[in-house]
Length: 261
Image 1 (cartoon, rainbow, N blue to C red):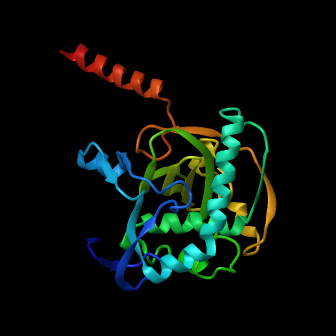
Image 2: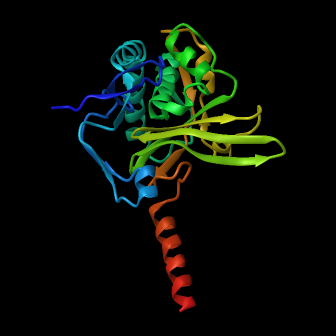
Image 3: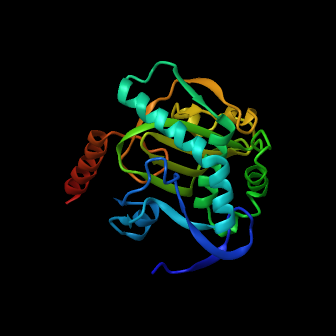
């Protein structure tokens, strides 16, 4: 029997019984058990978490879960299937413009649902404009402080992290990682900036898809994307080192410790 969880819905802001939100949606290759280390596990010294019915979190009320799933879920699943097909064709040679035929606004709104579903209850007021953007399916254009970047993700472990990294703060400029979600075929990094300036995902050469929000709801359009391929072996946001690079890093650390004794 599933334990009933009560709390504040990350979308409507009401205190209600919360339903399990799959992040990403179940129909986007997230319908099986997953075992991996989350950022929270790393901070608490745990080796891993087990997600028995797919990756997700009890964070949306049943009404918001069903409403947003009906509005955006099908378009996001179709986009993800196209991404899987393209990656299987081009593999790591994704340095070309690949054509997708999709509903961009629906897709980016589902990505933002994922970001809010990962967020803490305490961030409700901070994300007020974003919540309004999601709950009005016809509203275009993200609130100006938000940026969304994407990449192909096929190696490593899933990434499931929210609000963990303040980056690049200088001269009154700053970039904050609100969430990063990675599960093949795609990874997404959602960030905010204090000003309209280059964000840290740009420095990692992720592909900015914030412009998906310019389209109308349910509007189909061809889009051409040059998505980079990134690996996610560690739970830390924006860590795209290969397994060999990580192993070398730990080896160097061990050698330094040994040299002290």
